[in-house]
Amino acid sequence: MTDPESTPAPLPERFSDLKKAIAASYGPDFEKARKAWGEIVEELGRFVQVVEREGSDYIPRVKFQELDSLSEEEITRIRRVGTVVIQDIVDDNEAIAWRESLKAFVKDNPDVEGSPEEDKQFFQLYWTRAQVQARSHPNVLAATVWLNKLYHVKDEKLMEAEGVDLSTPLTYADRFRIRHPNNLWPGFPPHVDGGAIERWEDPSFRKCFADILSGDWRKHDPYDLAGRLNARSSLYGRPNQSSVFRTFQGWLAMSETAPTEGTLKVFPDVHLSNAYIILRPFFRPLVSPNSPDIRHPKNWELDLDSSGFAGIFPRDGGYAGPRPTTALHPHLELEKTMTSVPKVYPGDAVFWHCDVVHSVEEEHTGSEDSAGQYCVPMYRWILATGGSPVSTQVPFTSKSELDM
Image (cartoon, rainbow, N blue to C red):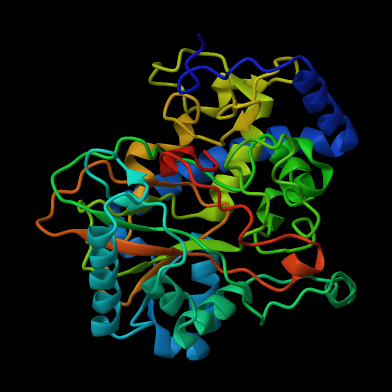
């Protein structure tokens, strides 16, 4: 069996045809992709040095009270990184009270579904009092509206025609975790949620990355809604594959959680990771993955013949991913660039753009539980198109089964 972490999984031959069709659709412009590939690789080399040096400090932190007074430079940086810690969204004591309420609920209802089975820490609960209170808190709603408004459509008439309202947040029911210290969570490697092969196969979804595929990768805008409004992120009906568009994903802290304490890790440049991941299937290495020269642009060539899409693999009657790995995506240098988010306190929240490569620290080396409620900004257009932000929440054994 092919190891999807080291070799592109063999996909049906029609995916080779898909590569050729995509290239042909851009005509001479696709030739720019060769040059773009080299530029992206070089840019990644520079980026790796910076983020390795700065670590968690590279990720923006802002206070909730300052959201409406941030400078354009600060907002641009948040957009580029794709991840932000918003501090003091709710009062510390209120967040701690929610945590204690959830602990009491689980204690009083020992049969609730959770994982791991022998020591439940991730719970399949959606509508407890504490969760509803957190989702409906006015500051949480205000923060999600602010995040939604980082997105835009260049044609305002399109927003009106589609019924898009970024100022009206919707409730997306999700779960919570109370992770204990000194245990391993190995099932959350670097991945991107919200669509796998669909990023290339679905024409509307592919429009989100048109500038990348045409070679003008620097013009790529991860916050342009135009392609996402009608994008289909679940073409195959795979179990637990989200079928609604989530502008960001996030969680609200109910405890102190610092790097090495089981927190979130991200690749902190959504523009650059999108450019690389989208073009990667169209290129193959000419040297061994273990070669010290694997990252040199001269050791890669255009590949429209193979059916594999690096990081995409068959699963449950459909396709999962993208799941970048060191072997398949060497230029990302994930061992250096996957960056733990800064320390958070009760009432803070971490949000990351829907395209951000993210993972969870395997180890929790702290001394206290790491607790958080998952929260997702959404907007009114979902209802106008007949989608339901709740209907996609199907219980499953492990969070690692969702989207990945």
